Image 1 (tube, rainbow, N blue to C red):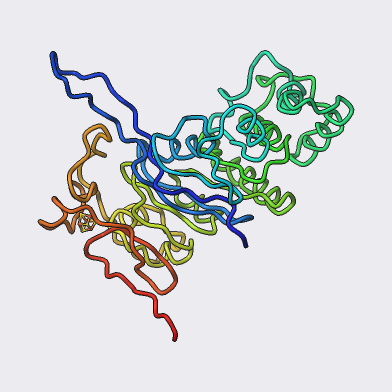
Image 2: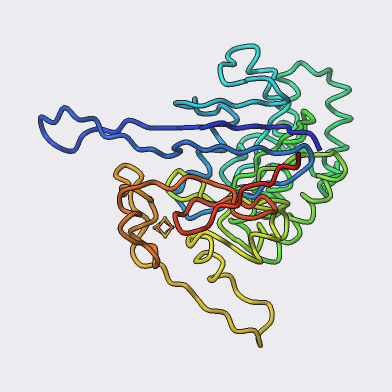
Length: 330
Ligand code: SF4
């Protein structure tokens, strides 16, 4: 599989107003702070972490819905970081987003037909082609032509997310960034929408970045998983390697909270103490040290780098996970 997307040292910082009177220091919220990863064509990269860790900001920065503060984004080998105007408009055809909240993301005053065909109208796709595509899209997401003159409030949450998915596919994108697409849905409906997304991926050869905090859902749909903490990537690995043998203490804690399917299997729960620190005032050294059960003196002063920690290419950022150096044959 070829690399579709490459993100290098991506940063998204937001300047904040100072809370101190007469202070000249301008606080900065480092929502994303130096994230690098790549995604291959046709794969699903799960992006996980607690709320506020920078997952959604990473997704929005890749799509350039928010301008990155620093770093580079390559799509199909092209550096798109500085794309503006017409270049950016054309790029929107190839990269789309599915939003978390199917209630808020659809305009309540527009019919389903208008909502789904809107991206095609923006790109001046002829009416006959739009109408044909609309019927096809309704069909592939499990709705029918009978629904097209109705309004969003007439649909259930799962149906509205199907409408959101149909709209995101209207321009035949290659990359879809799915921002918590099932977290607002009932568990039984979640499974149906996930199955639909998988079948659409096969049918249209889609590449997904799947942002979520539910690790069971991510396990099911992802090929690889990246774990974020306070704007940084702390671990990235193939899904089975990560779930079988998480290396970073934060990943271990997250996975220990996932319910075990086998009720006879004992699982040790790692309870994280304290809240997620503010990204506006992150801890020094390893950002996880205030909650890490294994923190030592070095963790307070030195930031660990993301390094190779298994022969399978698993990467983690922790001082106490041994680096594996690849053997080169002469
Ligand atoms: Fe924990 Fe230290 Fe490793 Fe950070 S570097 S995860 S604080 S042991």
